Image (cartoon, rainbow, N blue to C red; front, side, top):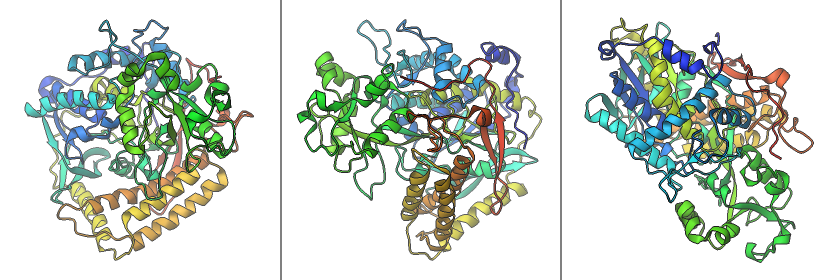
Length: 638
């Protein structure tokens, strides 16, 4: 496998402009003959489907949910970044680019990140035109707030439900194209494999989750917009159905998987409350604008938070990072919370929580202003915990939220398989070892609305003579047969344990050994543990029902089977990367202050793993990261 990032020549500020002016085009008459398959209908998938259909391509779009607008993008809360500089506080495209590179601990590709910052400004105009109800100041101008790792206010938001409003905008654009007949929508269809013919992606195999029917679909190009793989940890803030299956099938068909150990632990989530809990709930990072994080100065403090006087509270982020305070990046805030709890200063019944307190903000701004900004989040918290955040501090603790790793893509967002693209969270390209808050929505919409519609033409312009391939082709039949056989194997297994039980056990291993901190001996041990548990899964899992009707346990079993293989690759990747960077914190490599310590001499690269078969170890390839614009330094937020 040869990795070619296909980065254009020229200065970083001119690369994208020059690319757009020189990229090959597909004529309108030829677009009508080209079929594109889009898998996923979150912000990336919905915006890409709508944009490509508007341009004249024939589009088929697939999602496993009952409606495109139930994609997990709808759960995003805090906001979306854009370098508009409406606050006149010194923001710029370069500053957004620099903050993203630094926030990712210098483990992302400069050219892709600069392009992301460059097109961010267009996203806001697009969404306002769609009617997205962004928050506005009294005079009617769009409002902004700050997120972690920056010193400007560049985040546009719609109270605490920004993802929902943005997805409704993209869904509206998608629905228009469905109504016009330019998009065929396949709800409740799950992708089970990628079909390759003559080395190129030429289609997918899907299963109708209602009827159980297996279907083959041809496409001149296949676009994956299937989100992240955080549910490998079992407990995460992701939707219960979020999975790695589509990306994993692409990996097993030759698409390199990059930086799988780069996972993000979000610092502000409602803590685990019981052993059999199956889902965690995010509390938006935006709350750190006005909330102050603290723990008692005394260990094993039993008093109610309101009974602890100010001089007996440790506002540890403000103490340790005075320049950024409570708005340090997520990886820094999460490790700081873990350190306080590990030292015995945690609060709540488990000791695995810290306080997020709004008392000062309510005094300063008034309850009405705080409610206008965060009211729906406060209501959500009170419904889950029974505590009123207006009167008592929230209890929060870090939890798995996002994955920076994903399918390797080049500048065109194409994987190492020609004709197979990955956009949004399922690719690796923009966030390095740690994503800054409010940048996931930015990337999803940038990829779908403003980047892929240009870059895909470069490939398709060379493919206009390709006639539709009959799905009776042997490669389609082979892929469909393999998908059926895997499901039959799961159904025939006469085991005694549920899929849920195995998923929970796998998640505990991945969290314990590859969570907020990792070390070499533990990672090696974890590989053996996962291998043994995977063997037990295939021997003892029980999947009821059959595959010719609605069977959610069968769908779940297939996803968990892929999580087992992914978990092992994550451990390998974390073991090979013998440094600390961003969310990948190797205990052997830290500064005297406990911060992540990079090894730029040996690890300034993105890993790209190549599948070699079920019985062979994957091969590690390395894309060297070149920093011509930003000089990597030890991150400091003090």
